Length: 269
Image 1 (cartoon, one colour):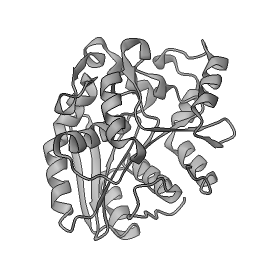
Image 2 (cartoon, one colour; image 1 turned 30 degrees about the vertical axis):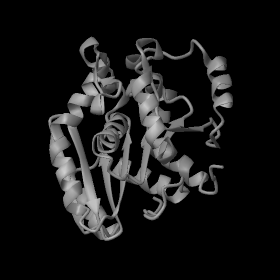
Image 3 (cartoon, helix red, strand yellow; image 1 turned 90 degrees about the vertical axis):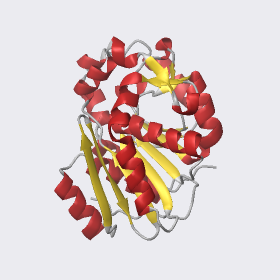
Image 4 (cartoon, one colour; image 1 turned 180 degrees about the vertical axis):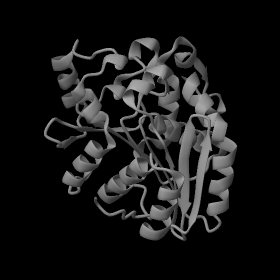
């Protein structure tokens, strides 16, 4: 397993931050005691808080240089539960900017006051603030950043997400990207089908800077390349509940971590 090594003093893309926040996203799936031991003893973050309410879990960790919040995701076959008519309906976005997925907004709402209060407590010395998440956790991390940025104008150094579903409509994406795109990095692994729902045809749109791992695990940031790829696989995507083994494998955080290890020399222009 690679080592956690966060560089806390940059808002630019940093390969070791991408890998470290991927490790945090994977760690969020563990039991609270396991997470706490790793964060305190191995990562040298003495301040720790695990939050869990209904289907929303994650952790916040802090030291004298940084505070990070990582949200737990869900398994691909469980994510279909978030695609019901009630959940994919839109609700008003943070500060009234666009609209967002009703189910994701509700899940963040269960823990938002607890999370925001704990972040404020851990940031006593104005440490840099970071967010991460995988799958459902990626959507929740994105909404948390949006609330802090658009409602409170709070500085956030970076958002790194993995296997993220679409979170809001085009207006939400436009406002979010105008404010935070240069510090938001959204990783998509080859045939990870979760990144393709909810559908664009339903009014949903992605946010952040797009970084794609091809079948060989090589990273690309060229959207033209991505659209050519989509054209080649058009019609191959199955219903989420019938995801094949490749889509499941590509959604696994271990696959994202392995690809990030391979691409530690990659730099954005």
